[in-house]
Image (cartoon, rainbow, N blue to C red; front, side, top):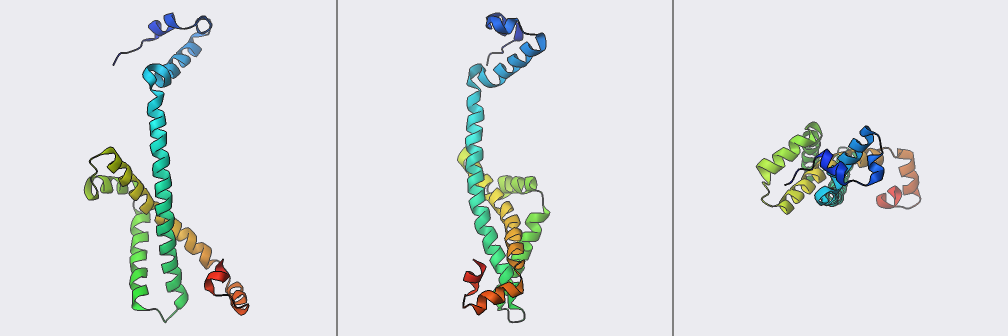
Length: 173
């Protein structure tokens, strides 16, 4: 790895850069050294590609988990006293999941998944670990957002939809 110094760069730089003030020459040199020298811009584009992959993957997992948890929680809340034991168990698991995931920092969750649970050996394994961890984390927040949206529908609005002959899904849609 060769080191580029300012004096060497300035000697090889175009004439219009040599006529600029010192602070601007230094700024342009830092930009050149960070992005252009030895094709370092490729590191940034590779990182951007991985960021998009992790974001899309975590978004999909988070929405799926969040909607499932929101449906379980609203079903439990809407049934009143006639709640089957399976729904009670699923609701208890959902509450535990929401409390633990929302109560711990995301960085701690990433460290636990990366060094204790998954222990990825390759770069693709690290990406999968990030996708799964961020998906689980965002699923807790999506669950609460979806549940609050469902629960905010007024009982009168639900009854109006039912009186028109719509089922629960059609009423909510």
